[in-house]
Image (cartoon, rainbow, N blue to C red):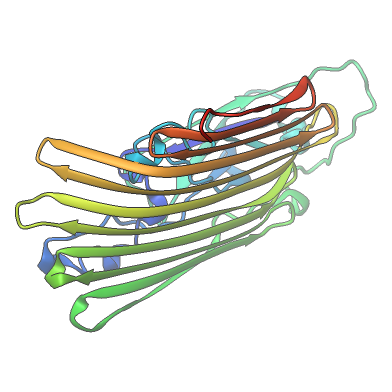
Length: 324
């Protein structure tokens, strides 16, 4: 089993809000440009240059991401524990157990990416003296075939006067072992002679693979105002949903992880000084035959107003914050 870690950073930190290169200079006359190479990203796993698995990543938001008032007391889902994505390598044992082979990763965008993605892997191997295992004599045949690229389309529309534009990007894979669907819708509009930029991003990803199935959703609305003195004022709201049903390959049971994040915030920057405030809620549920866990935290400003936790593997308790 291969665990794949994929993290977008630098100009790829907010990859889900990047736009196709054809639109990056739409607001050029207002000295406003965007990052390109589109919003779609996938990590393809290859054995000896042949594709054997694919990952479409979750939109992890780091602790200063978008509006740092979102994350003053709590952070988004998986921020401190980036998700890994599991690839079943069992069908390829007949290849891997003979001689020397390479496992490679390729990050694809529209068609490329900017800088930079950190991608790594962790290969888990279980040994057995049993001779009962049988494998396909042709593991790279049709039953385990992965197409080299996804089916990808992107279209947009620029409004009159070049003061607004929208982009819709869709992608899909319908390989024998993988079924994935992706949709990203973005809308940008300028107001007040270019001094106010409104942004709306909505993205959904659903996936079915040999070891997991589920869906992600991401929605962002932001209004950024630039004053004549160069100061910036941002208002933003964010919502995320993470749902993944994974198979424990060693024990055979399922693990369901579900998380919901909602945040609103403001950010003001004036020269070297700035301040930010926000309200955030995070709810996580984790369910497996060995553990049931729930955590629900709400923050207003910098005050934790409620923090509910229940863990059936070790008992349960309710934590009440004074004044809540």
